[in-house]
Image 1 (tube, rainbow, N blue to C red):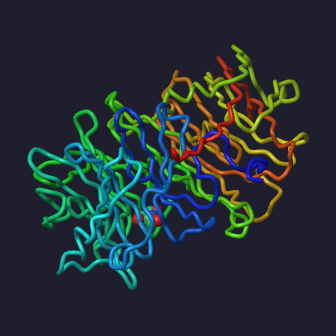
Image 2: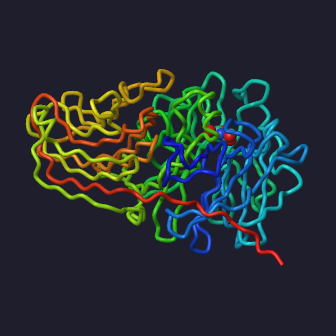
Image 3: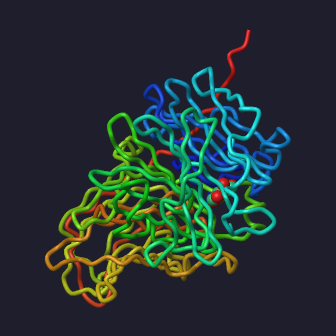
Length: 475
Ligand code: DQQ
């Protein structure tokens, strides 16, 4: 049934059905990429949280593996196995996560190459540090361990919020992953670092700087990056930005791969009602893997992982096309809901230009992915994206200055209800659309208020993936 769902992505990773949220425990182990994720195998809603697991040799074709961690033990994680990370503990694959409720930091390890996991019988940290006034309701917000080794010991960050102050990333240290000592926050909320509570904090070096990722509450819309220096166990941020400017990319986590690349994934939330998610039988999609780099202006740049090119099928290539609103009827029109579009535009006198996507004949339903010259912003205009009155249709924008003479390079991934747009190898704007008509699949270049030159356009139909299932060896 799910195979015929026109909104269900075809080449983004997803569980077979039901609920997915945060990426967890990202690690490359013996050459293969392991992706764990928050998962409810019992339904398309958040609850009963397990760690799902998938593995890939190439970042594109994923094999679904058995559930790695399930809620179970009283006093550990009976209400859910919440987010965390994976590390190589001197040769032993090890997961650290938050068991709920109340929150406790827990550990599990594998003796069989990450296939099955054994939980340490007690929490490794059973309660937050005494004396801190932590945000939260019945239970404190204090979760999502991020762990690394430095010189002669392990370090851990835990996300939390300090009442009256803001979000915080608490630092702990340990000689053996079992005995932990609390030190202090490496950073607390200030003008640069928003949010009352930080979820899924993570810290990693990138070139000669450090990056801290925080996913913030109560906003619950963005993973922010802070770029700065980590010295004397304190983080000193210099720049802040959004890992994605849309409202759907959250709880991002990264891994350092064997090639030295810092790769990032995030949870793509849904933009429709709980009832619609329940009727669909699935909710939540993993983003495409993104390669991070520091840009010369000190911000975080990102591109889609080049491995994704293996998904390309039929191809159209056009060059030097002048596009204007008047020529809209004659502009080339393509069809598809699973496409990669790579385009380079030279600004002429248009004040807005880009592509109609998911466009029905006559334009009853259509979504605009465009650059607005006056506003200096990339936009995804979803206001006409669906005839369904219940789905999200807000306009999404990302500030993007184009210095005189610079072209705009758009890299757009359409995968049914997912739109991921990379602009000038700098930033990303991701959104969700839910057209109702089966013929809402047109794609065409468009310009408003003048003309634009489409210097080059490449468009590929993308392969639909079957995420293979793991089958136990019997006999
Ligand atoms: N999701 C997990 C938490 C984390 C939140 C629970 C972020 O551990 O803080 O599913 O989306």
